[in-house]
Length: 227
Image (cartoon, rainbow, N blue to C red):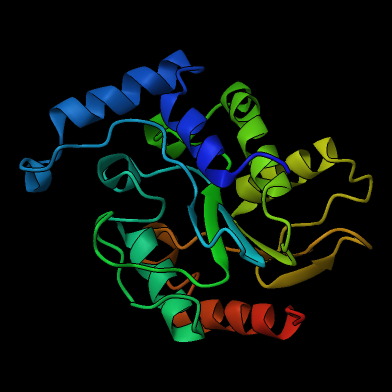
């Protein structure tokens, strides 16, 4: 038996490998945003979240400073999370369309959420070195998800981070080109990769990523899943 997702999560939460990210996430948690001044910010690395028997993995970039860095749960408490969870609900992967805090009753079915970096980075831009230090957690999560069939990466950095993690597990295939809605069969023994724009406010409010475009991604996911 390999290690569990719970064991990995405990190590993620205790991580202090990146001094710049530690300083930033903790400073944000102290200063807070005015609208959240009554919150006790999480202010630590954010572990993955979801169904430990998931056949679908969603890989994002990093926690938002006043989203998951505040709430302590991936894709919870910000616009990206609102957009993603609503889409998962419409596709039947979530029991409710909202994700506001860790005790809000959200349950994911057949989906696990993670990111290539677990601490909120300044300007939402983790350095290559910070991404590399965080990568072992993603590698370990991939090992701990035995039923994985489909991976959805949100944005180009998440796609690159996922492929680098997969290479550490032995993947030797080509590097998939990033394009929204592209389906990349990675070969026997590997999950199918679907690349998508990230549901950031910048993308959703400008129309670069619409609800209809995102719903089409999750319909592809459902078609690809095998019983």
